[in-house]
Length: 175
Image (cartoon, rainbow, N blue to C red; front, top):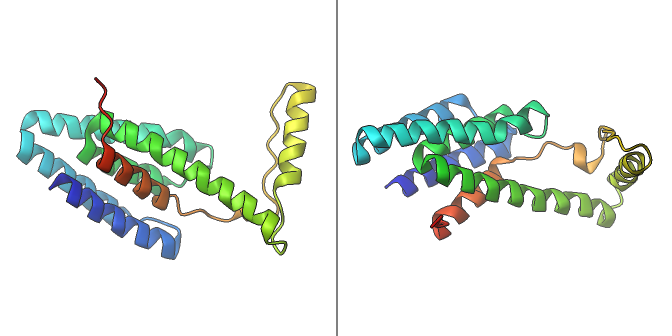
């Protein structure tokens, strides 16, 4: 039942994120409330505690990405809501898979600039940042140019959904 409900939450979030590039708070709050209720119903007080820890871990793992501008606030809140279903260990693992999936998709976006010449390629910007790091030893961030493929908003809820679904299917044992 938990897995079905978290999959429904992710489907709603992905649909909104693909269409509007944002995830409404009503979906996130409803998902978190259902996660708390189901955890409490299934395991009592320890389930509510697991949901609370899952919420905190889910938020904490994507919060740095939001603060640095890599993800949106809705993405961090969505991962927190998913944490109420999966608990702290499950949401940590699902988030790590989601970040990995998001990285692969981002590489695909960057490589698409090599194939589709109508978009501005990020590779010159990346090379300049890397040369600066090698020569000075200091990182330099150059924001994407207007029209650059890496400057487009990326619906990270897709990566979260794929990563969480992968975790649900394979559920990593920690033993």
